[in-house]
Image (tube, rainbow, N blue to C red; front, side):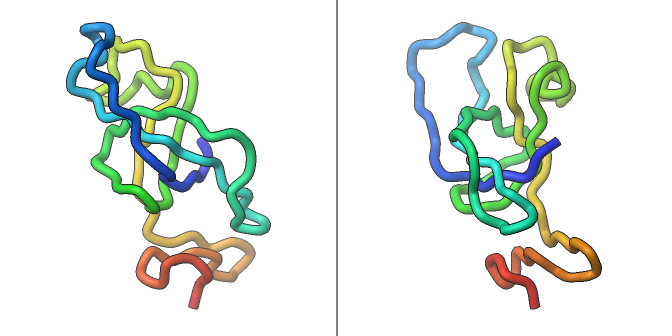
Length: 103
């Protein structure tokens, strides 16, 4: 599992039938030490109904096919949770209510 920020959306009108009904989002992993985005932008299936800018938990590989929406579908990355807050080493490093940065 990784923490990432939703940075955009993908729209595809022509696709495999197994992808019909799935919302595609662009996510960028977050380095928890610095809370900055790092690495490559990934395409992920939205299994929980997220919006752009939200901090989310993503899974990849076979784990991404374990949600009700992605089961038996060609998925490599899926968004499985929206993060409310993150505490690291007894310090709040992210709070959804305060839009990153803790208390």
